[in-house]
Image 1: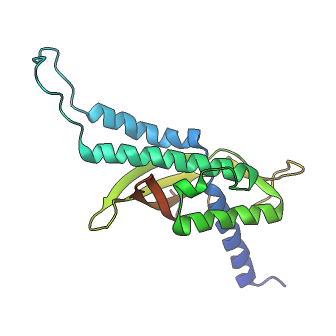
Image 2: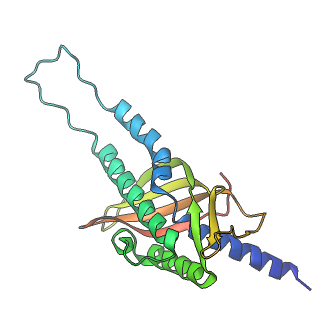
Length: 201
């Protein structure tokens, strides 16, 4: 007999698998969530009057907005690399070690390992919205916190050999919040942690 606990565990495993899978969200889709922010940033940039003296220096961009744009670019790359890895259930030949470290890297490798064992890969695309970037004070390295609403309704695991879609728990969250922490290393921004919230958005 299936106990409530066993049912809960299966549901939790299904959510964790889907959460791990979500890390492979498509880069082109992600930019849809960040593009609006980029447009807003551009619109907020100071404009130059046509009558302004040509000798006047060009105002420098807001440093905070420049940092946010840099993080978004790195975030786009992160999702792009993960998309490539999850599409073949393997990080070899990808730049995963360049864009992720710590628990974020371990979590991704674990998800990829689970997919390989199951004989699955991921197809389709995720949708992203309400992507925001904030910064932590008092850190040794510049640290950013990225919050995103992820829609996985069109992002599906399939059998690698047959191409048939793999059934997932019907009660799983199709839209949920994820929070990532990234640090600025000499090589650029690196995601060191990703937390999936059991909360719809």
